[in-house]
Image (cartoon, rainbow, N blue to C red; front, side, top):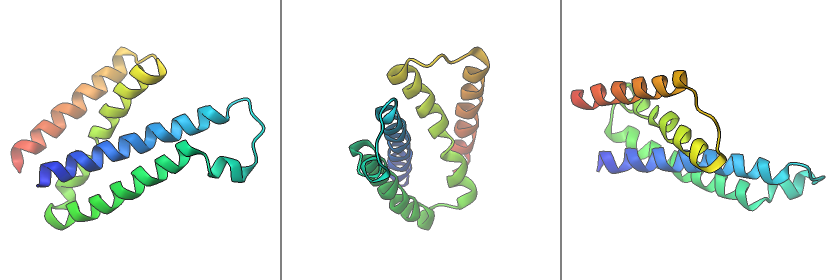
Length: 114
């Protein structure tokens, strides 16, 4: 149950971040009013994903120490890096990939503790 909650929070948070990026990309080069921007489908999806992610995060915190749960959310850096590369064709340099590897190693070490 805890692993499923953690995975859900990470995925929803990542999806929310990607939807935010897609929202601002859809505004690029267009003169849109603030209400049109606020009602953007991508922005609404971002708010929904982040909102549900927050609710699941609260459930997770009821079951797991924050000192263990919060570092696990660093997996979002990994997921967003892969999404940025795959969806937006962003260049990821070797130093960034090294950081991703360190995050994965750190999460793996924390996972052994639980």
